[in-house]
Length: 110
Image 1 (cartoon, rainbow, N blue to C red):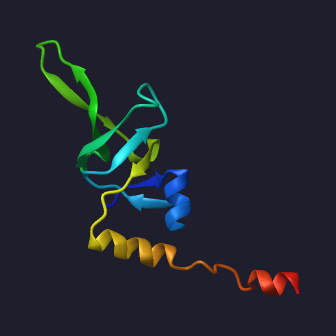
Image 2 (cartoon, rainbow, N blue to C red):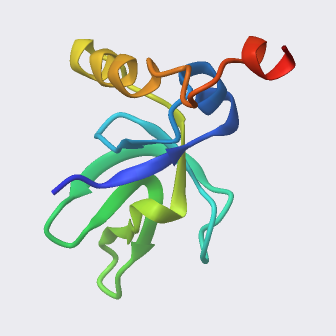
């Protein structure tokens, strides 16, 4: 199961890609829900429950134990990517198609 999240505006401009599958060391910002505007690193991608766990987004249980809170990946934006060669290849593949339409700007202006 792949869980994808949207990229922040500056990353979207840089790579010309809208969303990317989320992975463990990405830095994200929560944009919806009780914990919105919190930022942190992804500590776990819980595929079975379709949730991600984020650093410092935790709750204290009655017995004093702290447990991470699962956040849905569609409710976060990725602010910093952890890049390795596979991820770079994915961005190249997805963002490489700069000319999306049939006509270029030159054709339109002519």
